[in-house]
Length: 300
DNA sequence: CTTCGATCCTGGTAGC
DNA sequence: TGCTACCAGGATCGAA
Image (cartoon, rainbow, N blue to C red):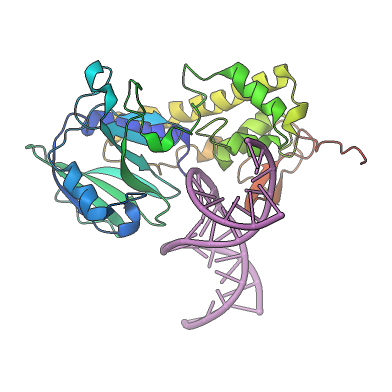
């Protein structure tokens, strides 16, 4: 399940192996892989051919590659450009493969390039929750941010993330803390795994109302979100250079370092209490019943 | 406006 | 062995 750290590893791979190359041919092998593109897969492919990819960008779990001149390099172009936007969903991978490698079972989109390098870009996605699409830029954005994700909040690793505004939103909302962490309009890049990990580190129960979070608590929680993401990046990002073929979101490198997610009935690494799994929003929440006490509900 | 549940998908696995 | 049921889960949409 690619969350921010996995997507960042993919971004680095795209930057290294795809940015700067010119598209020669696009094959869309599954219609669902081209998302919210009104004019269909054929138009998507036609519009990409001949374009060159700019730097690889990321916000939360979204990736994009601006086409043609990038705003920050050519401010006069800021008015209207196009970016290729990608989301890996739950099972998506972006692979840079030798053209000799046989097609993957779930290969959805292939991009061939107009150069002599041996590699092509492949979007592979078993469950087809992910997809690619083309979008105009948000006016004035220096990175060609696609307008389709203008509503996605900055992520916690973004230097421009507004911590005070995040805290104010938590206090204002009548929701619970894990819901808030997964709300991509408040903070992006956090999925079920890193939400459970950060809450465990912060000793907060997932059903804690956000309105009860003091500024020190929300600051600490945000720090834990950042820490666990940096740790995952440190574990997964380092092996990247020698594994460039795995420009994907499925490296699994973080599995061994998880403290909460997936550890039902296993001992808490702080207090030894058996962790619990609870059904939550059609998924699961893992927590320590001793370290992460449920909120006290006042009588109505 | 905010909140919340249903929905999309398929491979792996548990249970009978 | 073969079948069914369930699980994983991000984002979107529509209802309340």
